[in-house]
Length: 493
Ligand code: GLN
Image 1 (tube, rainbow, N blue to C red):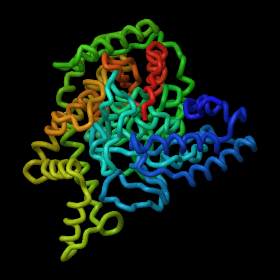
Image 2 (image 1 turned 90 degrees about the vertical axis):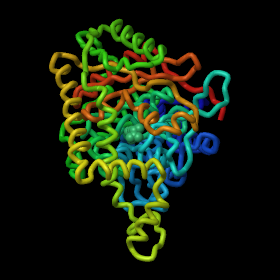
Image 3 (image 1 turned 180 degrees about the horizontal axis):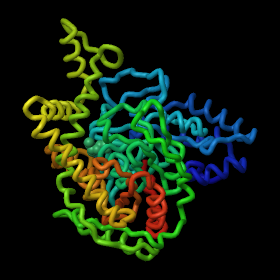
Image 4 (image 1 turned 30 degrees about the vertical axis):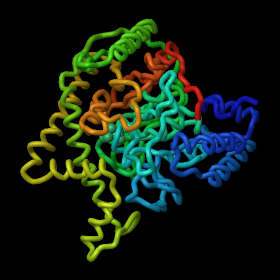
């Protein structure tokens, strides 16, 4: 029998229906793969075998009786940021020690309602703050990819590093992730997987630990474009519990796959050609443009003049919102508590012991930019810049551009503990230079593997779309996937 974990969701779905194997067999195949790999890759922070087998058994019954859901029996991993009832939910932070919520996030509930099986919770940067998955309380995730001839451990990107690495290493069929400033797209690019950050409001944020509420959005990381379409269809919904979720019908994204690109206008923003960008990224971008042209799209040069202000504005808005959102972790009702001489002392001690250094940095920056006297100079100004960034996109879309093609990352995956990046947080923040504008503007964007660099490591391209036009993204990046092929790491773990 072929290795069941090598099947895509679309393939497994057909074979489960054809009774070539059972959901329990598929789940067991994943559980043994996770068991064998987790010590080396550190992708899961909690594995839930009993729950997985129980869900798979129920799926087998549904498959037998002919009322299977669209994801019936498909084993998935869940980023630790999503609340899962009765199961480890700690945003990979020490401050949430032992937290097992009484409720389920809307996105994961939607997936279980569609028949998916939960394998466990995936590692991530603490509270989704980071670009390398090195800020997790549970230690870094190891990228399943290694440079040619090297045994050095590389980062999988962040903050959804566990999700991306688990999908790439076939430790789940697909995974949930979130993207506040690039956390779906950048790890997808570093691991040769596909990720989509949908339009703000497409998925409910209810039950997802908040980082920066006006930017956070959930989406899938998958092995290929079709699987990402299948997952997003089930994850997306309007939800009375999140008033920013939008009441628009969720299209069948899979239908967009394979559609012609004729008549599509793709914009190439000149501002994304940043100084010092490696030639390999330039070449990849040019290749992507050529592929889309071959597929029938029209290519036009565009300008998004406020792009260079996105990064500094993001690193004001995101920490500001985080400083407020994270005020609730005080040791009173859940998570870690360190006793003190009085309640204020208990708060301080619990927060000091519970948060890691990157989270503390963000809380301090956020508190500073919101404080009296600085609010206008920083926060208010950043919000104005945000409007200008959004307007840049509105102008090009108004002028007839259907989507924008750009790089995702300034390089391929870097080494764990990279000294330059560790010494200077701003250098790490620069990792997000291509991904952040999209979150500031609330737009959908998709990351697709487009090739390998000289070291044999995956590189991705991103396509940015109009609000709620995820379908154009799926059909366009599918053409890139068709031309570039798919990328799987050689197994060493
Ligand atoms: N790297 C960015 C940050 O640390 C983005 C993280 C994210 O999208 N969650 O804020």
